[in-house]
Length: 313
Figure 1 (cartoon, rainbow, N blue to C red):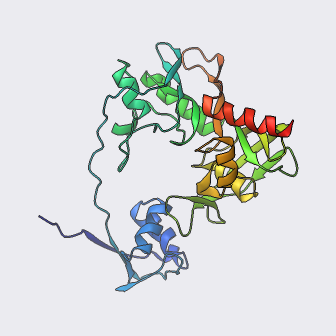
Figure 2 (cartoon, rainbow, N blue to C red):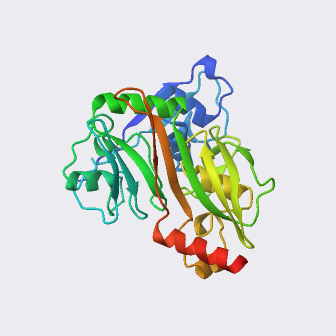
């Protein structure tokens, strides 16, 4: 049985005169800017009865009408063992894991694979109940195609304190990335805003309308075809390292989504982006003492690194 969509209509306040449609929509209805833009792009936003694009400007007193998005069905957490997920540290407040490639941090619509949350549940861990139902205890995430260290909160206190540290950008998140070519300069900072890709909703891009995003990188080792970089994130945008390196014409080896050379990836035997979260440091929520954890490269990344190193010998 189908249900009619909910339509809501409000007059544009004079204070929003001249604002873009997506900005006004976000302010008036409480949507994220991305959600507001998606609604406009799919013809679900009208001003005075006429469909409008997200970039059009509104005038005070106009009637802004929106077809409200239907609530997504609740996502269930499935307790399912995760092969290769290593417990690096475990105490009363936190569990630090080394996430293997191909595993999501938490369930989401359309994802049918294993998750960190489900793996911990299958292993008998009880984690914090803070956060959205499908991502309880998750204070940060790694892409499905990125391996490495994650910390998950077990206590409510740990969840609150760790989330605050991530918001304050005091967590030391270090990644190693094998990128194509040789960045110039070999060490530097990429400061470029990241937002949704204008044509592909599964991708992100450097865009003037994006959120501030800062990536610091340093050369570890240079090879003929690639460079191994140590990367520190100042911000934590989705796909940040992948987007920033691709925008500078040095995508992560194997990252076909962001323009990597498939021939090089095949030659090195890697079928995902060469990107690994190697180190994670933060103040422990129990006593405030600084703790650091490290993770070795998985076998596939180590093999690719050995191969590119041998080619350069």
